[in-house]
Length: 334
Image (tube, rainbow, N blue to C red; front, side, top):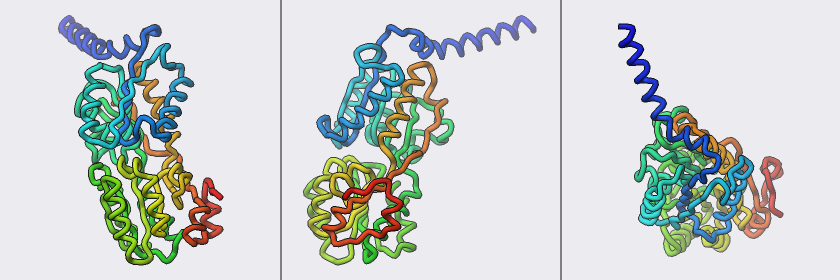
C-alpha cells in the first residue's frame, strides 16, 4: 500500500512538472530570443496613435529588461478594422509559434483565441471579457488568455452626464458605434440605463465607413439639441478625424472615449488612461515569459481615468463650460 501510494505521488509530481517544463525552460534560457506576436484590430501601421501605443508597450518591456533584437522579437500585424483580415493575420501569427501574443481590441483577441487555446494571450482594450467568452471568472481566467479591459460600466452614465454638463440644452444623443465590432452592445447596455435620469433620448447609430458617418450625422443633425457619444471601435477610431470634423460642422457636442480624440479637436473625452493599461500589459507579458500562466494572472479593471476638455472646440460650438466641470478636468486645451 505504501509503495503504491508513493508511486502514485511520484507519477503525479512528474506529470505536474512535465506540464510546467515548457514555461520553466523558457524562464531559464537567458540567451534565447523570445517571440511576441502583436496584433492590433483597428489602427493602421502608420497611424500616429498606433505608433504611440506600440512605443509605450516597447518602452515598458525595455524597462523590464526585454529589448528587441537582443532577447525578444516582436512580429507586428494590423487588421485595419477588417474582421476577415484579423482572422488571416491572427493565423499567420499563431502558425509562427510565438511564445506569447499581445492582442489589442476585441476583434484581435477573438481572432487569436480562435486559433489557439495553448499559446498565452494578453489583451488590452476589451470592454467585456466575460461577454467576449474569454473568461467566466475575472479573478481566475482559467485559460490561456488574460489582460486589461478598457471599460467599466459606470462610464456609460458618466459619458451622458458629462456631455449634458457641457451642453445643458441637449435632449437627444446619438450613440455612434461600429456594428461589426462585437463590443458595441456592451457600451450601449452601459449607457441606456442612465438616459432617463439625464433627460435624454438615445439613438443607437451604427457606422461602418466614411459614407455611413456622413449620412448618419447629417440625418441626426436635422433636428436641434442633439449630441454624440462616440464609443471606441475600429471604425470610429480609424475615421476619427471625419467624425470630429462632422461634429464641428453640424454643431454637435460630442464626447469621446480617449484623451487623444479631445486633443485632435473633439469637445470632451472621458475614459481610461491608455498608456497605463499598455504598461500594465507589458508587465503581464514579462511575467508570462518568466514562467507564470495566464490562468494565474487576474483580468484587471482600469485604474486611471482622464477627463479632457477642449475649450477651443467649445468656443466654436458656442458653449460655455462651467467652472465646476473645468475644475474636475485632468487637462484643459485652450
